[in-house]
Amino acid sequence: MARVYNFNAGPAVLPLEVLEEARDQFVEYKSSGMSLMESSHRGKEYDAVHSEALANYRKLFNCSDDYAICFIAGGASMQFAMIPLNLLGAGQTADYVNSGAWASKAAKEAQLIGKVNIAANTGKDIPTKVPAARDLKLTKGAAYVHITSNETISGAQWKTFPKTESPLVADMSSDILSRPFEIGQFALVYAGAQKNLGPSGIALVVMRKDLAERAPANLPTILKYKTFIEENSLYNTPPCFSIYIMMLVSRWLLKNGLENIHRRNREKAAKIYAAIDAGFYKGTAVPECRSDMNITFRLPSEALEEQFVKEASKQGLKGLKGHRSVGGIRASVYNALPPEGVDALVCFMRDFARQNG
Image (tube, rainbow, N blue to C red; front, side, top):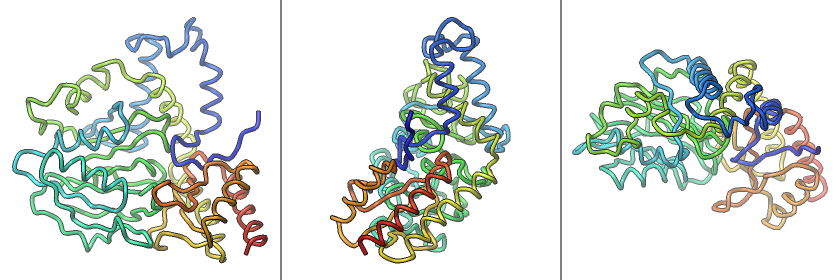
């Protein structure tokens, strides 16, 4: 088996030990005579997986009983709609901070449902950045304030979160549990799983239970957060195998510890940024907003960028091509990417710059 270093933005690298355990249990799960993929979501085998996943994520977020943990199919894009459907009442305004492509998508979805105020807009700024908290033009009495904690495409990240009077909601898809933070500052956080938590197609939602009471009575049952809270994310058959992988990842996170993971993530990112700042390469995000998860940079020409991606791929450095909407290079260095992968990339970057500079 030849494992490459996977720098894809998502679906992204998973911890090797998680993949190996899932492989070893795939055909027959814990002497049950069948795979977990074939097991009933009401059976004892899956019940143990589901319960542990909920408990582990509650521990990782260190959240009180005032918060609910939910597993919801559809990924983060489903949450773009569910949040305003549940939280944005008639006559209310929701504040959205546009920091880039994903924040913009969330705002556009909310605009289909109710009134939206764009509290700040750095979505088209070059070099890329997130707004400063002092520049937010917030609505008094807003239903909620929505931010995107890390812009996967642009490589810009909130380093400190704004303090708001209205409930703060965050899309944390690309930096969830990559660093410790105080969940009590937020009313709701959500994340598509496919970057730091597990497979694609499912979202983790952590929310204050009282918010679920806002949903209008005529909202379809399966779109109500209250349904997922009351039914323990088992109202309908959940994506059981995806939640199983998320459970294994939660074990890995607990074993490693968020402080250690954060330190390692910062060290990985710092090595690549040092290689960028040495010359030849040009970072695309302002230094104070540089993401620890998605490191974006350009080369002197698009032809060199294409050559860079091809040569890197031959050396087992995969997924470095920038998003199709912006081009360039993007190295996604999520929790599970080993430091050895970063060392290999930095070595390649130095050799490539020496040969082509």
